[in-house]
Image (cartoon, rainbow, N blue to C red):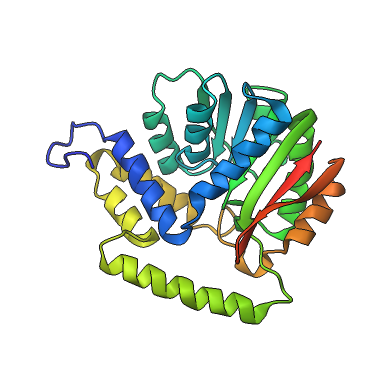
Length: 261
C-alpha cells in the first residue's frame, strides 16, 4: 500500500489494484477463470482489437486483463462508485486505450453519456446482482442498443438455480469454511478492505462520498432476493434484442451468460 505517514504521497495505485483482486478472490476463487473464458469469447466473436464497454467496472479488473491480452483493444469503464473509479483512473493513468465515466445504470439515459455510440462487446462481472428484476430487464434492452450487429454481451454473476437448494447450501457451507481459513491467514474481506482504503489519507474523502452514495437503497444495494437463474437471464436476453443467448460457463454457484446481437 501507499505510505500513509505522508498525506501528500499519492496512493500506490497498482498495490491497491492487487489488493482489490485479492479481496475479490476471497469470495471468487475461480475469478481468473471467469475472465479468461470471457476474453476467449470476445476474441472468437469480434477479434483482438475490440471496443469494449466494461460495465460496472469497479477498479477496472476486466479492462486490465483485456488490455494485457489484447494490447490494441480499447475500453470504456462505467461505474457509479466514486472510490473504485478513483482507483481505476489512477491505475490506468496516461493509458489512452481506456477511459472511465461515472454513470448510474438505473438511469434511463445512461447510454446517452457514453463516449461511443456502439461497442463490439459489453462485459460485466459480479455486479448486476445489485439490480432488481425490472431494472435488469431494462438494462439488458439498453445494452442491446449499444452493441453493433454481431457484438457480444457477457455477464458472469450469482445466478442460483432454485431447483437445487441442497446443493446451494452444501457449497455455501464449503465457501464459508474456506473464507474463514483465509481470514485467519490475514486475507482482507469486503469490510476490512474498505476500512483499509478509508485509512489512506488521500482517499478518505472519496470513500466517504462512496458511503453516502450507497447508503441510499434507491441508489444501490444488493438485491439478493431477486437473483435469478441462468435460464431467466437467457430468456430476458432473447427478448431484449439478442439473436442468440446461452450459458457459456458455470461454477457450482455462479454462471456466465452470453448474448449475441
